[in-house]
Structure formats: structure tokens, C-alpha cells
Amino acid sequence: MAESEIVLLSGHDLRRLLNPEIVIAALRETYSALADNRADQGRSVGFVIEGGSIHVKSGLLPGSHLIFASKVNVNLPNNAKLRRLPTIQGIVVVSDAKDGRPLAIMDSITLTGIRTAAAGALAARYGARKNSKRAAIIGCGAQAEYQLEALRTVFPLEMMKVFDIDEARAQSFATAWSRASCPVRPMPSIDGAVADADICVTCTTSKSPVLTDEMDLRGCFVAAVGADNPEKHEIAPALMCRARIWWMTSKRLPRAVTSTTR
Image (spheres, rainbow, N blue to C red):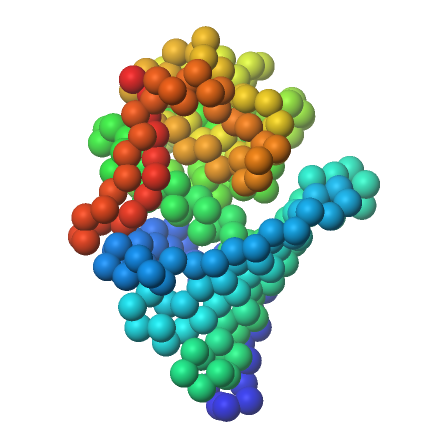
């Protein structure tokens, strides 16, 4: 790259360049590096604003410290309803940590979606049943398609059930993402969606638990990705109390916190 050149990557560019397999492999390598360099854990700061929040998350490339990246996301849950804009918007800035040159500016909406889904799929590779064939996604917003793509990359899924409080959105998602080898079926309730699921992903903005203690989730791997602040809740405390939570720390494996219910 020329000294003055900055790569600009739109969401479309990122979707074209980053398939789930590539991102999952990169995350595995990075989490392994973090296991050896725990002091390199990233830093974050949050701000509460009217109608939502702002998050700034920054970190160095673990171990080598060659690259510095910072993501600025603005999260406004009512954006779609009030302004017809995405809930989360922002950018990622990547810089050379040795000479300070800005290297790239990327759309964080797409990158966050791809990375979040890849992290969940990577954790599921180690925490879910190896022969997992049935999955459920609760919440059919922007994150749902990334989750579906990532899970299909890791597991030979034969059925995907989905639920959303907006029935039309769940139906539209199912129509767009069904495949002959893995149909996507919208369900009228969360209970119906998670019944017999090997893997369940919750990607909602709910302030009350969507997975409750009464649900039979024995043996189901759960990736709750929506509760990103203290006001949001996706897993009932009683259900969490009877879950098995594990943390991979091997130098050969990524560090991740995941849970499965007994």
C-alpha cells in the first residue's frame, strides 16, 4: 500500500470477501493468540444516549501488536420504526500500530454481523453435539441471516426453526433462506421453535427472558448474542443456574464462554 492509501470497504465488499469459513478460521487463530497473551484483551467504553447507546471497542492484534483496530457503533433499537434506518450503525478503523498509518475504514454493520455469527458458530463447534442437525433462531432481524450462514458452514443442518414477534418478518426470512437440504420453518411460538433443537441462537433486543425455565432445553447449545447491555435479558436466571457453562483455555483452542443446558 502507498503511504497515503486507505482501503474503504463497504458492507457489500465485506460480504463478497468474508465467507463464514474464512472468518471462523481467523477467529480461532485470534482467540488462540489471546489465550497466550491475555494482557492484550481489548478495551471498550459505552455511553447511554437518548433511545439507545454508543459503544467504542478497541484492541491490538494479540501478541504481535502490529495492528490496532477500533469500532464505533451506535445502537438505536427504534431506528427502523422511527427513521427506517438500521438499529446498529458504525465504522471500524484499522491502523498500523508501528508507524500509525490508517490502513482501512470498514462498514461495521456487516462486519459485526459476520463476526458475531462466526464467533457463535466457532463456540458451537466445541460446545454443541457434533452431529447437530436441528437449530433454532429467535429473532429474525439483520443478525439472523449471518447466524444461519455460519451454522450451515459448521454443521450438516437438516432443519431450522425460527421465531420473531413480527410474524411477517419470520415468514419472509423463512422464504428467503429455505433450502431443499435445510428448510427454514417459521414457528408461532418460541417453545415450538426450540423444541428438539440441538442449537439455539437468540438475537433479540428483549428486556425480558425469551428462554424461560419452563422450556425443555436439555442438551441444547445456546448462543445468546442479543443481550449486550444490562437492560437486555434473553435467558431466565433459573435456566442459567441449571446450565453448564464452560470456558476453553487450551492454547490450541479459542477462548470462549458458551453454555448448554443439562
